[in-house]
Image 1: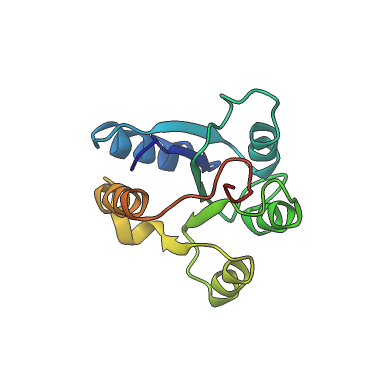
Image 2: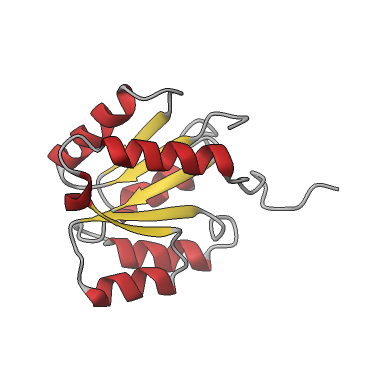
Length: 147
């Protein structure tokens, strides 16, 4: 990982958010973590004029079942937005319903992760995200190829 990755956790459940925060607090390298309670709040952060709201490069951990704008609706919006469509998104949800899995992958998520498979500490989640961030090249922050 050449530049620290920001994690945008879009999650309305305080306990799940706290687990993610604790999991990554113990993990090195340090990640900058931003939290949004639903898709509306996440879009506000991503579309903010403040470059520190969600600094690049970033990865989104997205829940499905949230108020105001759920995860699938959020995916539809960002995939239709030229400035956000290349966002890397992992679903992190309690739902293992096949309709949710299919809907998420139809919006080009990088992976579909069921919370119960990570246990309470989310250690495996932090290891998975860290490995991903160390091995994957993130898109440039302006969305264009370098000259």
